[in-house]
Length: 434
Ligand code: NAD
Image (tube, rainbow, N blue to C red):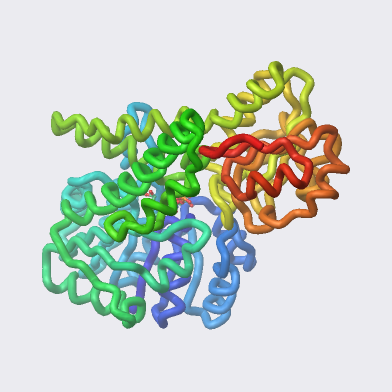
């Protein structure tokens, strides 16, 4: 099939590359000409495991191309995906200007029947708005489909290739058939293609992200309580995860969620519920717990040191989670702001996010070339992102490099007893300090 994907970010580029990998001819469109040039030169604008190889192979086979010119891409395609950003507006609602602008541009370029698929995360009612925008601009026939994306950054290629389910909001059989055909290579192992009305498809995406964010904030509150009553959150987590009604996923306590999706999607859902005069009370709490949790390590550092003035803090991990270079809403940013405001110096290392971090933080932070280098002369280490390479370090080497052996672990990647045996003062989340 001939496909255009408009918006070549974490979702659009992964979707485009995976759709090309299954034999389609895909043109990825982005208004950011520098990004298009980078991709045409065979370089990656983002880090995502497995993506570079997939893009290289499909570019080489000429199934995957990149352009900044939308009309030609639309004219040559049967299906056009909209995968542009839906950032948070000032009031917390989803900003749909990019989605609606693209819908208008697609309509103007139409030369026959097209299926226009909204892959961006959009509030209920957006498919209808997209339909209206297109109808105003063209007399050509078209179908609008809602096809929310559930991939996770850090495992995006794998998630797209082997989805748990594919959700399709389609209101006409021709579009439904095309979507089933398109997704057949990805659902051969039995993942369901769930066809429903557009409103349900749109809400499914927000409900999924809000549920996951709720589990995280819930466990973080359990962890905070563990610290007050002398319980261990790891034991509590294992005990509740063994209950099949609860299950083991998304129960790890830490210093809060970040990224481009959970924070904005939780707020957007609160906002569009409010627009229907419904107060989504749980989600307001989820949000405020998360904002507090991001400052949890800072509070522990203040309690330990008294004042942070003049302290040198090593930071391991800047990205909002491992295996990505994305720093949108990352807990590291809230921690760094607090440390600098308190008069501390920050020496940070991340395996993938340093380039992005330099753009955001400039010279406010010193960036180290490796995790050990970040420890030189540090009064303490803060672990912010649970990259695998931080899990088994050489503790003796760490102690030698640091001025004082104190670790604040925001992701509970070490065992408190072992840390004590290794000569560290060790603080983590929901477990006794050692
Ligand atoms: P992103 O910011 O990485 O990429 C968006 C891209 O769209 C950018 O490259 C931008 O230049 C381009 N763009 C914006 N306006 C355009 C226009 N008018 N024409 C052409 N290109 C345009 O965003 P993302 O993380 O890929 O997210 C895209 C959507 O998918 C959002 O709605 C997001 O909520 C949703 N989503 C994201 C994830 C994720 O993990 N990142 C997962 C599922 C769903």
